[in-house]
Length: 340
Image 1 (cartoon, rainbow, N blue to C red):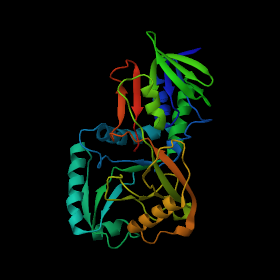
Image 2: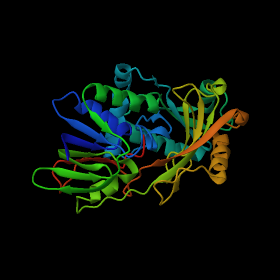
Image 3: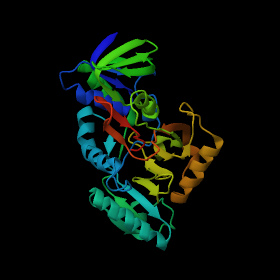
Image 4: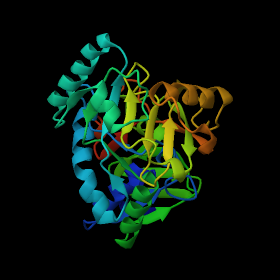
């Protein structure tokens, strides 16, 4: 049995950044990952958005950590030499009556601590983004919103952790976890691992890890999101990240440049039961293309170079699950982090 002070399950952005942070201390740390490399699940198939924190409900973990993460991201990316651009976000409204919802979001953002929020009229919005739908009525502008390269962020964090002595065990699938007086035994298809402290960063499978140990069950039900990626020659078709007013399904289909210089539209939002289903669909791609046109009618669709799909690790109660489990000392969850 291999032993460590700390075991981290999952080598996505959360697991790798946790490993990087803990590697500054005098711990022996091992990261278990079922895939052959880091950044192979949700971390490689997402919007790359660093949210301002406007749309998170006041008082939630999501509201707290959207803001803190946003504030930390610039320095973190400078330290890791990772691409990050604070390009700002625009939430579009197309009717006068939508101003009520824009103002509600602005006030919510202010309560969350988000700075410099403004509601801009049509002329100012179109001056900023001339390719937007000319029927836009107004927009909520959050200048602290940004975009990051999620691949670089995950890989760089893992590289720093590895240089600091963290061990990564790839192609290692967790099958069961048990706890005794000394700590946790994590059984895998490559043998057993033991640690005093367990960090659960298993993404869409984080409920399985938690539920092996806790009587207070979690439920992760993934939401599939499909995207279209455009060639870099149209990467500046918009400069801000463009949202439509949020609905119960989330912040909707966005149009954004990427930190790598492409243009990206998506995602769709469909609850699924299969945690391995990352296939794109005709219906999903068509929905993304048509919905994005509401924001930016003249999108250069001929410049699409690929489509892809990712799964949000959505916990059924809608908030982040962060910290030590109530009834399992030394089990630390980083679960339900579906966005950002």
